[in-house]
Image (cartoon, one colour):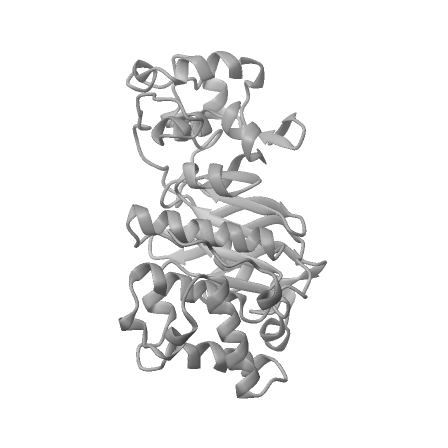
Length: 356
C-alpha cells in the first residue's frame, strides 16, 4: 500500500480552523407513533473536548445514530427533542435556521453511512466539493477547486479523479470522497456515522485509517458512531456505550474495554475479536433490546443480563464514577471483577438471567 500523504503544506488552509468542544446533556428524543410514544434516546450525556475522538457504540436500534442526527439537527420534524447540545458553548438545539447554516460544514460536518446517497450521481465529484466551498466561503471557483485538489491529496485520491462521476469510483474511493467533502469547510468536529458499513474488510481498514490519520494530523474533534467495539478500540480515545436509548458505560477507551464495569460492555467485548490481541471464543449476547414504546423499570439490560437481580429489575441504576473519568450504570461495581471472569465463559450467557 503506498505511503499516505501527510497533512503539511497541502493542508494549511484545511487545518487553520480550531477543533471544537461538544457538551451533550440530558438529551431525549421521542416520536409519536401509532402504538404510542417511542423513547428513542432517554437522557444521554456526552462530552468531546477539542481535538478528542469519542466512539459511540452499541447494537442496532440502541439510539446511537439518533443521537448523531440530534446533534446535527437532522431529525424529522415530528421528533420531540429535549436537552442541550452545546457546540463551543452555543446550544445547537436552540439555533435559528440561519445559525444552523453557519455552523454546518464549518463547525460540524457529517461523514455518512452511504457515500452513494451523499453524492449526486449526475455531477462530477470535484464540482460538488467546489460548489459547497463557494456556497459557504468567500472564494471563487478556481480557489475552491484548488482546495478540492488539496483535499483529494489528503485522502489519498489522485487529483485528476476530481473530474470523474461517483459511479466511476469504487466503494472505498467514494467513501474517501465523502470524507474530503466533510473536510472541505474546515469543520472543527467530524461526526462519522457508521462510515464503513457498506465496505469490505480491506476497504474498512483503509477508510478508518484515513479518518484516524486526518483527525489526528488536522487536530479535529470527532464522534465515531458504530456498532463495532473493535473499531472504537483502534480509533478513539474515549468511548460511550449505549443500550436501549441510554449510556450504560463511558470513559477512556483503554480503561472501559480492559476493565468494563457494566455487564453489557462485557458482553459486547466478548462478541468481537482482536480487542486485546488474545484468541478467545466469541460469545454473543442472547435476547433482544426492550420495547422502547414501554421501556421496563429498573435497568434496561436486566432481562438479558446473567447477573441481574430483583433490585436490578426494580431500580434504575445511575451512572457513577468507577475510575478516573470512567462511569458505569450498574448496581454492583464492587462485583465487576467477578462478573468479568464469569462473562468470559459461554455458559454464563446460556443460562436464564436473574441468578446473580
